[in-house]
Amino acid sequence: MYFSFSKETDLEIDRVLNVSPMAIWRCWSEPDLLQKWFCPKPALAEEARINPTPGGEFYTRLRSPNGNIVETSGCVLAASPARLMVISDRLSPGFHPRRSGFLTTVIMLSAEVVGTRYIARALHPTPDQKKKHDDMGFHHGWGTGLTHLGELAPQLDRGG
Image (cartoon, rainbow, N blue to C red; front, side, top):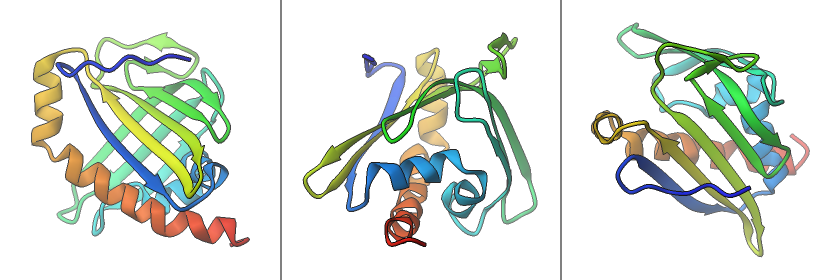
């Protein structure tokens, strides 16, 4: 699959993690694992429901330190174990359109000599929505979550 990148509307994090693609896939596709790393602490991922198949549900409920709750529900658009996960909140499970939505998330994984290249893209419909997401702290928040993922995933490679 080919995914274009637009500097006007998209944000991206690109890192190499010393862990297998399958361990990262598991952290994205298994709700109990996703809850352990998905948001920067001290925020909590209280609930996750994931059906990692096209048309499946991707739902999270996050609680901030001050008690605010953010629920996000979306649809898995594409899924290939240890390679690709594409999710959008512009569709509900079963590919049903919504009147609104904020972004489409593309997670691309590829094996490298030292582990896995992890590319996460946040695709927005407008430059204003990209700016809003960037101003919300995209790089810090997603980067911190990725650091948590990088701490959890090696445990899976070791049989944890």
